[in-house]
Length: 165
Image (cartoon, rainbow, N blue to C red; front, top):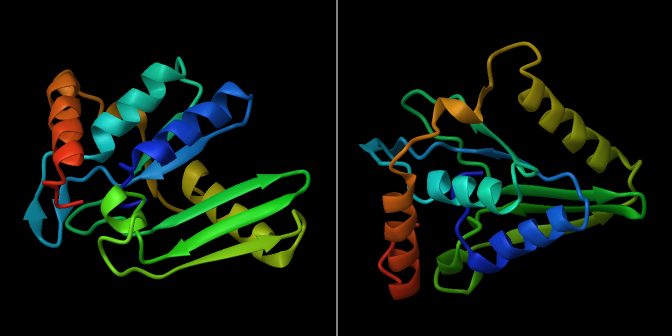
């Protein structure tokens, strides 16, 4: 996921984890965006918050980027009663989800054993387990001690609407 910052989405992920759902995220480390260096906001402070608030139950891996970015805007929610796939151009940020940018997303509801759900599960598993290449990195690769400052910066930017995400 390229950007994860919307407070409602963050709260929903924490609540899902609190209910016992397995929550696993592959996030862009926000090192580079469109050729420009970045400092890890918003994903690094959000990832730290999610892990802190759930005592590590929410698992995070970083996409193994170099000069590119992991620009996916994709979410799969699956369970015994079905799967919901969200995919499109909208980042999971307030700017994108609250109609401040014109974005297009598609929501697909499918049976848990349907072809779309199975293919997306296989894609995620391939990245998560590094099947065939080193697609993702452990959370510790981008874990940092200054995350509290970045978390404050992210929250202030988000609250005031002064963001690039």
